[in-house]
Every structure is written in C-alpha cells, then in structure tokens.
Image (cartoon, rainbow, N blue to C red; front, side, top):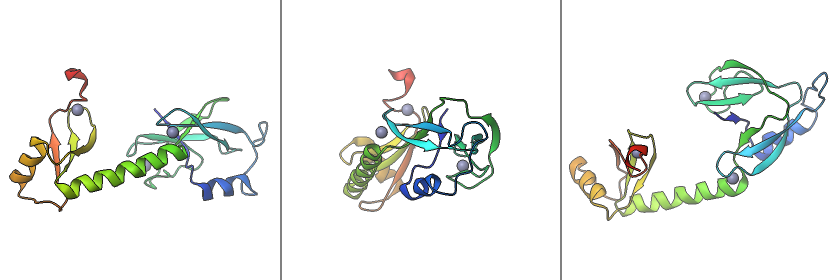
Length: 164
Ligand SMILES: [Zn+2]
Ligand SMILES: [Zn+2]
Ligand SMILES: [Zn+2]
C-alpha cells in the first residue's frame, strides 16, 4: 500500500510557503517522499498539521492532507495519523520522464499495428508489438486496422505469477 502525496512542482512550492499550518509539536513536520517506481528519495514534504491519512478505494492509494483524493477528487476514508519517519510516495523526475518516454513509444507501436492489452490474470497492462501474432489476430478479430488504436483483454500473460 502506498502513501501518496502530489509531487507536482507548483503544488509543492505552495505547500512550502505561507499556506502550511504548523503541527502543534512537530512544526513543519517533514516526511521523506519515496519514488513508487525506483524507491529513491524524491523529496521532503513538509506536512505540518496535515498529517491525517486517507484512503481512496477507487485509486487504491493512501494520501495525506484533505479527505479529497488528489487523483479522482472523491472523498477518501480516514486511515489514521502519519507516523514519525513514515515515508510518503511520489514519482521522481527520472521516472516521470521514463513514463512519458514509454507512453510515446507505446503510441508509436499502436500506430504501426500494436495493440493495447490488459491482463485479467495479473492486472498488468501495456502494448503488444505490431509483429506479434496476438496483435495481428486481435486486430483481425476486432476489425480495427492500424493506425487506429486497438485494445484487448488477455486471460493471462508472460508476467502472470502462475506462469513463472
Ligand atoms: Zn523514480
Ligand atoms: Zn481516487
Ligand atoms: Zn498477467
């Protein structure tokens, strides 16, 4: 389970200035923010008095601050107080760039005839390359020709734990 805090620069800058309500004993109440992808310390978040944790069932994340989920905006469920030394989760600059890069590569592959997939077995998702028989068959079956985007659900994939 991940504790999430928004790490966009603009938002963080705002948190560091006058808008942060101080915690009674802990003051600025700093917590390390760890990248959910590579585990590197991404930054330090000054939580102040806003150290209440909430869980969003829709996004399956735990976040800090207001009860509203930073991703979907719905009201989360109260989870308790942030412990001293507990890490928050974010995405570091490097992984953010990698994710954008991956997204670009995916779109290129789709244009060439690739197919977006989601594995029902393990929940993994990604793109099947254009030359792969599964991609060719899926497009044939669905009657969708490249460069139109096409998606398929698979019962299992090479990442599935039971196939390892
Ligand atoms: Zn990272
Ligand atoms: Zn949410
Ligand atoms: Zn799978």
